[in-house]
Length: 342
Image (cartoon, rainbow, N blue to C red; front, side, top):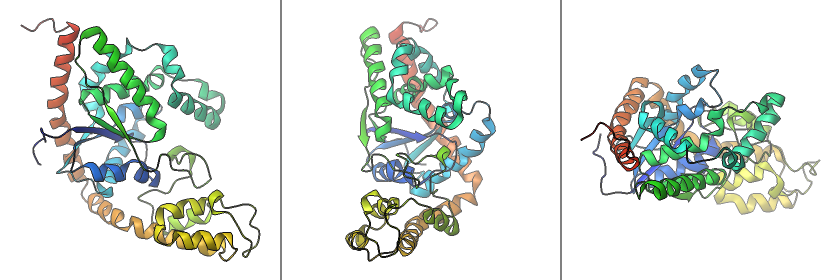
Protein backbone atom coordinates (compact mmCIF):
# COMPACT_ATOMS: atom_id res chain seq x y z
CA UNK A 1 0.00 0.00 0.00
CA UNK A 2 1.18 3.51 -0.81
CA UNK A 3 1.57 6.16 1.86
CA UNK A 4 -1.19 8.66 2.56
CA UNK A 5 -0.95 11.55 0.12
CA UNK A 6 -0.56 14.38 2.60
CA UNK A 7 -0.02 16.98 -0.12
CA UNK A 8 -3.25 16.25 -1.94
CA UNK A 9 -6.80 17.36 -1.25
CA UNK A 10 -9.14 14.71 0.05
CA UNK A 11 -12.27 13.09 -1.36
CA UNK A 12 -14.86 11.17 0.67
CA UNK A 13 -17.42 9.15 -1.23
CA UNK A 14 -18.97 5.70 -0.98
CA UNK A 15 -22.00 3.44 -1.11
CA UNK A 16 -24.51 1.73 1.15
CA UNK A 17 -23.93 -2.06 1.02
CA UNK A 18 -27.51 -3.08 0.31
CA UNK A 19 -26.87 -4.87 -2.98
CA UNK A 20 -24.61 -5.00 -6.00
CA UNK A 21 -24.02 -1.71 -7.83
CA UNK A 22 -25.67 -0.93 -11.17
CA UNK A 23 -24.99 1.21 -14.24
CA UNK A 24 -26.68 4.14 -12.52
CA UNK A 25 -23.91 4.01 -9.92
CA UNK A 26 -21.31 3.65 -12.66
CA UNK A 27 -22.31 6.73 -14.64
CA UNK A 28 -23.45 8.66 -11.59
CA UNK A 29 -20.37 8.21 -9.41
CA UNK A 30 -17.95 5.35 -10.15
CA UNK A 31 -16.62 6.90 -13.37
CA UNK A 32 -15.81 10.10 -11.50
CA UNK A 33 -14.07 8.20 -8.71
CA UNK A 34 -11.80 6.47 -11.20
CA UNK A 35 -10.93 9.75 -12.91
CA UNK A 36 -10.20 11.56 -9.64
CA UNK A 37 -8.20 8.88 -7.81
CA UNK A 38 -4.87 10.15 -9.19
CA UNK A 39 -5.63 13.77 -8.36
CA UNK A 40 -7.05 13.37 -4.84
CA UNK A 41 -6.43 11.35 -1.72
CA UNK A 42 -9.54 9.20 -2.04
CA UNK A 43 -11.53 7.51 0.72
CA UNK A 44 -14.28 5.08 -0.28
CA UNK A 45 -16.73 4.54 2.58
CA UNK A 46 -18.70 1.29 2.74
CA UNK A 47 -21.59 2.86 4.64
CA UNK A 48 -22.97 -0.14 6.53
CA UNK A 49 -24.37 1.92 9.42
CA UNK A 50 -26.43 4.01 7.03
CA UNK A 51 -27.55 0.85 5.25
CA UNK A 52 -28.94 -0.35 8.57
CA UNK A 53 -31.25 2.68 8.85
CA UNK A 54 -33.75 0.88 6.64
CA UNK A 55 -32.36 -2.67 6.96
CA UNK A 56 -32.13 -2.84 10.76
CA UNK A 57 -34.28 -5.97 10.75
CA UNK A 58 -32.05 -7.68 8.18
CA UNK A 59 -28.40 -7.05 9.14
CA UNK A 60 -27.33 -10.18 7.30
CA UNK A 61 -28.23 -8.45 4.01
CA UNK A 62 -25.85 -5.63 4.85
CA UNK A 63 -23.11 -8.03 5.98
CA UNK A 64 -23.36 -10.07 2.76
CA UNK A 65 -23.04 -6.97 0.59
CA UNK A 66 -19.96 -5.39 2.18
CA UNK A 67 -17.66 -7.42 -0.05
CA UNK A 68 -20.00 -7.15 -3.05
CA UNK A 69 -20.05 -3.35 -2.91
CA UNK A 70 -16.28 -3.20 -2.50
CA UNK A 71 -15.74 -5.57 -5.42
CA UNK A 72 -17.96 -3.43 -7.66
CA UNK A 73 -15.81 -0.38 -6.87
CA UNK A 74 -12.62 -2.29 -7.55
CA UNK A 75 -14.10 -3.74 -10.74
CA UNK A 76 -15.00 -0.26 -11.97
CA UNK A 77 -11.31 0.61 -11.93
CA UNK A 78 -10.56 1.95 -8.46
CA UNK A 79 -7.00 1.04 -7.49
CA UNK A 80 -6.48 -0.12 -3.87
CA UNK A 81 -2.95 1.33 -4.10
CA UNK A 82 -4.50 4.77 -4.67
CA UNK A 83 -7.81 4.59 -2.78
CA UNK A 84 -8.49 3.82 0.86
CA UNK A 85 -11.52 1.59 1.45
CA UNK A 86 -13.18 2.04 4.84
CA UNK A 87 -15.95 0.17 6.71
CA UNK A 88 -18.11 2.84 8.35
CA UNK A 89 -19.07 0.92 11.49
CA UNK A 90 -15.41 0.33 12.31
CA UNK A 91 -14.77 4.09 12.64
CA UNK A 92 -16.19 5.00 16.09
CA UNK A 93 -15.32 8.67 15.57
CA UNK A 94 -18.11 8.89 13.00
CA UNK A 95 -20.62 7.74 15.61
CA UNK A 96 -19.28 10.30 18.09
CA UNK A 97 -19.61 13.13 15.58
CA UNK A 98 -23.13 12.00 14.70
CA UNK A 99 -24.15 12.40 18.35
CA UNK A 100 -22.53 15.83 18.63
CA UNK A 101 -24.10 17.06 15.39
CA UNK A 102 -27.57 15.80 16.34
CA UNK A 103 -27.78 18.68 18.81
CA UNK A 104 -27.27 21.20 16.01
CA UNK A 105 -30.18 20.16 13.77
CA UNK A 106 -33.91 20.39 14.47
CA UNK A 107 -36.34 17.61 13.65
CA UNK A 108 -38.36 19.97 11.45
CA UNK A 109 -35.24 20.79 9.40
CA UNK A 110 -34.58 17.10 8.82
CA UNK A 111 -38.20 16.56 7.78
CA UNK A 112 -37.87 19.33 5.20
CA UNK A 113 -34.79 17.81 3.58
CA UNK A 114 -35.85 17.06 -0.03
CA UNK A 115 -33.83 13.84 -0.24
CA UNK A 116 -35.38 12.47 2.94
CA UNK A 117 -38.88 13.54 1.84
CA UNK A 118 -38.43 11.77 -1.50
CA UNK A 119 -37.17 8.56 0.09
CA UNK A 120 -40.02 8.52 2.60
CA UNK A 121 -42.50 8.96 -0.27
CA UNK A 122 -40.88 6.04 -2.12
CA UNK A 123 -41.20 3.88 0.98
CA UNK A 124 -44.90 4.68 1.22
CA UNK A 125 -45.36 3.81 -2.45
CA UNK A 126 -43.50 0.52 -2.09
CA UNK A 127 -44.70 -0.59 1.34
CA UNK A 128 -48.03 1.16 1.86
CA UNK A 129 -48.84 2.22 5.43
CA UNK A 130 -45.64 0.66 6.75
CA UNK A 131 -43.85 3.49 4.97
CA UNK A 132 -45.19 5.77 7.71
CA UNK A 133 -42.89 4.10 10.25
CA UNK A 134 -39.81 6.26 9.84
CA UNK A 135 -37.13 5.55 12.44
CA UNK A 136 -34.97 8.12 14.20
CA UNK A 137 -31.95 6.65 12.43
CA UNK A 138 -33.51 7.07 9.00
CA UNK A 139 -34.62 10.62 9.69
CA UNK A 140 -31.13 11.43 10.96
CA UNK A 141 -29.42 10.12 7.82
CA UNK A 142 -28.20 13.64 6.83
CA UNK A 143 -26.57 14.07 10.23
CA UNK A 144 -24.77 10.75 9.88
CA UNK A 145 -23.59 11.70 6.41
CA UNK A 146 -22.27 15.03 7.70
CA UNK A 147 -20.28 13.05 10.26
CA UNK A 148 -18.88 10.79 7.53
CA UNK A 149 -17.63 13.71 5.48
CA UNK A 150 -16.18 15.77 8.30
CA UNK A 151 -14.62 12.86 10.18
CA UNK A 152 -12.26 12.63 7.22
CA UNK A 153 -11.95 16.40 6.79
CA UNK A 154 -12.94 15.93 3.16
CA UNK A 155 -12.38 18.77 0.69
CA UNK A 156 -14.65 17.37 -2.02
CA UNK A 157 -17.66 15.05 -2.15
CA UNK A 158 -18.69 13.70 -5.59
CA UNK A 159 -22.49 13.33 -5.61
CA UNK A 160 -25.52 12.83 -7.80
CA UNK A 161 -28.12 15.55 -8.07
CA UNK A 162 -30.43 13.81 -5.59
CA UNK A 163 -27.73 14.03 -2.90
CA UNK A 164 -27.25 17.81 -3.07
CA UNK A 165 -29.71 18.53 -0.21
CA UNK A 166 -27.62 16.26 2.02
CA UNK A 167 -24.45 18.17 1.18
CA UNK A 168 -26.19 21.46 1.88
CA UNK A 169 -27.26 20.12 5.26
CA UNK A 170 -23.66 19.12 5.95
CA UNK A 171 -22.57 22.67 5.18
CA UNK A 172 -25.22 24.02 7.57
CA UNK A 173 -24.02 21.73 10.35
CA UNK A 174 -20.38 22.71 9.80
CA UNK A 175 -21.25 26.43 9.89
CA UNK A 176 -23.31 25.98 13.04
CA UNK A 177 -20.54 24.03 14.78
CA UNK A 178 -17.86 26.54 13.83
CA UNK A 179 -20.00 29.48 14.91
CA UNK A 180 -20.51 27.89 18.34
CA UNK A 181 -17.10 26.39 19.03
CA UNK A 182 -14.64 28.16 16.76
CA UNK A 183 -13.29 27.44 13.29
CA UNK A 184 -12.58 23.73 13.63
CA UNK A 185 -14.25 21.78 10.82
CA UNK A 186 -13.66 22.14 7.09
CA UNK A 187 -16.72 22.96 4.97
CA UNK A 188 -16.74 20.56 1.99
CA UNK A 189 -17.41 21.31 -1.65
CA UNK A 190 -19.28 18.97 -3.99
CA UNK A 191 -18.76 17.74 -7.53
CA UNK A 192 -21.74 16.78 -9.69
CA UNK A 193 -21.34 13.93 -12.16
CA UNK A 194 -21.92 14.46 -15.88
CA UNK A 195 -25.04 12.30 -15.52
CA UNK A 196 -27.04 13.95 -12.76
CA UNK A 197 -29.47 11.06 -12.33
CA UNK A 198 -29.84 7.79 -14.26
CA UNK A 199 -33.37 6.64 -15.07
CA UNK A 200 -34.54 3.06 -14.68
CA UNK A 201 -35.44 0.64 -17.47
CA UNK A 202 -39.10 1.23 -16.62
CA UNK A 203 -38.81 4.99 -17.16
CA UNK A 204 -38.72 5.75 -13.44
CA UNK A 205 -36.78 8.93 -12.72
CA UNK A 206 -34.24 6.93 -10.70
CA UNK A 207 -32.61 3.57 -11.23
CA UNK A 208 -32.69 1.81 -7.88
CA UNK A 209 -31.92 -1.51 -6.23
CA UNK A 210 -35.35 -1.67 -4.58
CA UNK A 211 -37.24 -0.64 -7.73
CA UNK A 212 -36.31 -3.66 -9.87
CA UNK A 213 -35.36 -1.47 -12.85
CA UNK A 214 -31.57 -1.74 -12.89
CA UNK A 215 -28.80 -3.39 -14.89
CA UNK A 216 -26.09 -4.47 -12.48
CA UNK A 217 -22.37 -4.35 -13.21
CA UNK A 218 -22.23 -8.04 -12.28
CA UNK A 219 -25.14 -9.13 -14.56
CA UNK A 220 -24.26 -11.84 -17.08
CA UNK A 221 -24.90 -11.44 -20.81
CA UNK A 222 -28.22 -13.29 -20.86
CA UNK A 223 -29.57 -11.24 -17.97
CA UNK A 224 -28.56 -7.97 -19.65
CA UNK A 225 -30.26 -8.98 -22.90
CA UNK A 226 -33.43 -10.01 -21.06
CA UNK A 227 -33.57 -6.73 -19.12
CA UNK A 228 -32.99 -4.62 -22.24
CA UNK A 229 -35.76 -6.49 -24.07
CA UNK A 230 -38.15 -5.34 -21.32
CA UNK A 231 -37.14 -1.68 -21.47
CA UNK A 232 -39.94 0.87 -22.04
CA UNK A 233 -40.08 2.30 -25.57
CA UNK A 234 -42.18 4.95 -27.33
CA UNK A 235 -45.72 3.59 -26.91
CA UNK A 236 -46.91 5.32 -30.10
CA UNK A 237 -44.75 2.99 -32.20
CA UNK A 238 -46.95 0.01 -33.06
CA UNK A 239 -45.33 -1.48 -36.17
CA UNK A 240 -41.68 -1.97 -36.99
CA UNK A 241 -41.66 0.78 -39.64
CA UNK A 242 -43.55 3.38 -37.60
CA UNK A 243 -41.53 6.50 -36.77
CA UNK A 244 -40.79 7.02 -33.08
CA UNK A 245 -39.25 9.51 -30.71
CA UNK A 246 -35.95 8.33 -29.13
CA UNK A 247 -36.22 11.15 -26.59
CA UNK A 248 -39.12 9.40 -24.82
CA UNK A 249 -37.76 5.86 -25.22
CA UNK A 250 -35.61 4.25 -22.56
CA UNK A 251 -33.66 2.37 -25.22
CA UNK A 252 -32.80 5.68 -26.86
CA UNK A 253 -31.93 7.06 -23.42
CA UNK A 254 -29.37 4.31 -22.77
CA UNK A 255 -27.99 4.53 -26.32
CA UNK A 256 -26.85 8.06 -25.36
CA UNK A 257 -24.56 6.48 -22.75
CA UNK A 258 -23.49 3.28 -24.49
CA UNK A 259 -23.67 4.07 -28.22
CA UNK A 260 -22.18 7.56 -28.56
CA UNK A 261 -20.22 6.77 -31.72
CA UNK A 262 -23.37 5.75 -33.61
CA UNK A 263 -25.92 7.88 -31.75
CA UNK A 264 -26.87 10.27 -34.57
CA UNK A 265 -27.61 7.38 -36.92
CA UNK A 266 -29.62 5.54 -34.26
CA UNK A 267 -31.77 8.57 -33.49
CA UNK A 268 -32.38 9.57 -37.12
CA UNK A 269 -33.32 6.00 -38.12
CA UNK A 270 -35.70 5.83 -35.17
CA UNK A 271 -37.42 9.11 -36.10
CA UNK A 272 -37.72 8.05 -39.76
CA UNK A 273 -39.17 4.62 -39.00
CA UNK A 274 -36.11 2.82 -40.37
CA UNK A 275 -35.26 1.07 -37.11
CA UNK A 276 -37.28 -1.64 -35.38
CA UNK A 277 -37.32 -1.89 -31.60
CA UNK A 278 -36.11 -5.50 -31.54
CA UNK A 279 -32.92 -4.78 -33.50
CA UNK A 280 -32.43 -1.50 -31.62
CA UNK A 281 -32.57 -3.30 -28.28
CA UNK A 282 -30.18 -5.98 -29.53
CA UNK A 283 -27.66 -3.32 -30.53
CA UNK A 284 -27.99 -1.63 -27.15
CA UNK A 285 -27.52 -4.91 -25.27
CA UNK A 286 -24.41 -5.69 -27.36
CA UNK A 287 -22.94 -2.28 -26.52
CA UNK A 288 -23.71 -2.59 -22.80
CA UNK A 289 -22.10 -6.03 -22.68
CA UNK A 290 -19.00 -4.72 -24.47
CA UNK A 291 -18.75 -1.70 -22.16
CA UNK A 292 -19.05 -3.84 -19.03
CA UNK A 293 -16.63 -6.55 -20.21
CA UNK A 294 -13.47 -5.14 -18.56
CA UNK A 295 -15.46 -4.42 -15.40
CA UNK A 296 -16.68 -8.00 -15.26
CA UNK A 297 -13.16 -9.32 -15.85
CA UNK A 298 -11.79 -7.30 -12.93
CA UNK A 299 -14.72 -8.36 -10.78
CA UNK A 300 -14.02 -12.02 -11.52
CA UNK A 301 -10.46 -11.52 -10.29
CA UNK A 302 -11.68 -10.23 -6.92
CA UNK A 303 -14.53 -12.75 -6.68
CA UNK A 304 -11.89 -15.48 -6.78
CA UNK A 305 -9.90 -13.69 -4.04
CA UNK A 306 -12.35 -12.65 -1.28
CA UNK A 307 -9.54 -12.71 1.29
CA UNK A 308 -7.77 -9.97 -0.72
CA UNK A 309 -10.91 -7.79 -0.62
CA UNK A 310 -11.15 -8.32 3.14
CA UNK A 311 -7.53 -7.27 3.56
CA UNK A 312 -8.11 -4.14 1.45
CA UNK A 313 -10.99 -3.20 3.77
CA UNK A 314 -9.10 -4.05 6.95
CA UNK A 315 -5.92 -2.16 6.09
CA UNK A 316 -7.85 0.79 4.67
CA UNK A 317 -9.99 1.10 7.79
CA UNK A 318 -6.92 1.00 10.02
CA UNK A 319 -5.26 3.77 8.01
CA UNK A 320 -8.41 5.85 8.01
CA UNK A 321 -8.58 5.85 11.79
CA UNK A 322 -5.34 7.83 11.91
CA UNK A 323 -7.25 10.67 10.26
CA UNK A 324 -10.52 10.37 12.17
CA UNK A 325 -8.88 10.06 15.61
CA UNK A 326 -6.91 13.23 15.00
CA UNK A 327 -10.02 15.09 13.87
CA UNK A 328 -12.21 14.00 16.80
CA UNK A 329 -9.53 15.20 19.22
CA UNK A 330 -9.71 18.66 17.65
CA UNK A 331 -13.52 18.62 17.82
CA UNK A 332 -13.55 17.67 21.51
CA UNK A 333 -10.95 20.29 22.31
CA UNK A 334 -13.05 22.96 20.60
CA UNK A 335 -16.13 21.82 22.51
CA UNK A 336 -14.15 21.83 25.78
CA UNK A 337 -15.10 18.21 26.49
CA UNK A 338 -11.59 16.74 26.52
CA UNK A 339 -11.91 16.59 30.29
CA UNK A 340 -9.17 14.14 31.25
CA UNK A 341 -6.44 15.44 28.97
CA UNK A 342 -3.64 17.58 30.35
